[in-house]
Amino acid sequence: MLGGVCGGVARTTGIDVTFVRIGFVLLTLGSGIGILVYALAWLFVPLEDEPTNIFSRALSDRRGIRLVIAIIPAFVLVQVVAASLSIAYVGTFTWPVFVAAGAAILIKRNASAAESAWIDGELVPMLSIGTTRHSRWRLLGRILGGAFLAAAGLFILVSGHGIGTALRPVGGAVLFIAAIVIVFGPWWLSLLRDLMAERQARARAEERAQMAAHVHDSVLQTLALIQRSAEDPTQVVRLARAQERELRSWLFEGRLPGSIAEHATTLSEGIEVLQQQVEADHGVTVEVVVVGDCDLSDALRALLEATREATVNAAKWSGAAEVSLYAEVECDAVSLFVRDRGRGFDPGAVPDDRQGIAHSICDRMHHFGGSAVIRSAPGSGTEVELSMPRRELVR
Amino acid sequence: MTDQGRPRIFLVEDHAVFRAGVRAELGDAVEVVGEADEADAAIELICERSPDVVLLDVHLPGGGGQAVLAGVLPTHPEVRFLALSVSDAPEDVIAVIRAGARGYLTKTVSGPDLLQGVYRVAAGDAVFSPRLAGFVLDAFAGGAGAGDLAAGLDPELDQISPREREVLRLIARGYTYKEVARDLMISTKTVESHVSSVLRKLQLSTRHELTKWATDRRLV
Image (cartoon, rainbow over all chains, first blue to last red; front, side):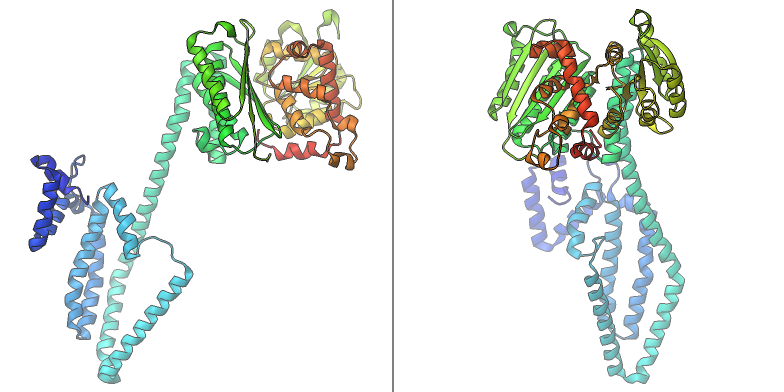
């Protein structure tokens, strides 16, 4: 798929997309007109979810048009130089190149975001131009190459005409170049500045959008929650606390709130993420104490998942406002205790749905050779003890 | 302690809102004999009124909680300090404990727990929050290594006993002293004496890991 023209034709006419494609290929093979039709359709037919086509956007893109006009002096320059050196084929050759360049600029600036990204990703590297950073050696090579070409050109000129006769056209060309640079130079520079400012503005806008999205997701949501629970001070404190922690980790550690696996590499980091999530989702305070630390392995990730399950259970069912979480890293095992002082339950008479949860904790642990013990009695809270053997070394 | 066993307490805290909150939470169970919001005034007033327990904010204008401890304890060793902190940063906590505070609680502590802490400190015992217990376990981890003995560490001061470790682990898990006692089948008094012994080691140990550990783990 290129511009999606075949798909569009197929959608509106009801003909199968494969036949449409075959048709275009036949047209192209027959007379080459297929390519032209395709390109024009791509330019003039708007995308499904966009109101305007590329051509009409290009017409209203004043900066883009200025940019195209700005290359006209360069084109005239090449024409004049070519004429003064009487190299006719350069003159005829530059026409299509300049028209194509102008069209490419307008299309690139006005294509849809996805197509523009495709041009950036596929075509620009192919031409090896654009914003990719070049090493110093490459720059040096380019300067040397340019100097060599200039010297060679001068040599050919002089050897062809003799110094006296060559001086005139060369001098004229140089004067003409100087005139054009003096006339159009400032304008080119201002255009360049404009383009850079535009690019910077775009980067800033993107950054602002990202920031706004994050602030909306976290801070504004929390503020709304705080307003709603204004008469419950503990809830307000908890929300403020969770938000503060999250904001801090975002501003100073550059960590986005999210899943354990993505954002934690060590056990204590994982527990911190878990704490934030449970506090934010279930409105309890999770008191965390971690002794020692180690890198996460698959087994320890399973341990964290089981811990999360146990903590969420405590938050949901116990009725307690606080859940204690204690983790200790020893040389041969990691122990984790999740404790609440809530209503507790009789492990002998567990309703089926909680039995299921208990199983999912135990099964997770057993799969990696760990163990889980749940202690509880009505009225005296619940404690889940998880233990996972570890094979990797302590940090 | 004065009449009816009401401990006389003194608040050192630079946030007026928090001072008022503590006063309200402790209510009539204690007698608040004074308040201060910075270190120099606190030292002067504490020496003048000699309260049973000083509730001490770790972060204070004028040198922090440590300055208050250093200013009061040499002349009035009978005054007991209970540190309160929002920061939970290990180096802060360890520093005030080593400067002489007999306990450490986070400011999020509930009213009844704070009151119990005050009573306990007034009675000469130590108060460990789960987090402080965790700090100690972390700092004293590893037990007796050959390196420790070679480094000339005193096993009496620089290690915690297996029993003390058990007590600390239960406290770190969120157990109250009473629950610890029940779990280990010992009396609450014994639990208190274990904790006080750990406090003494924490204050006197020259174990180099203690400071190194505290600075290594700025973020908890």
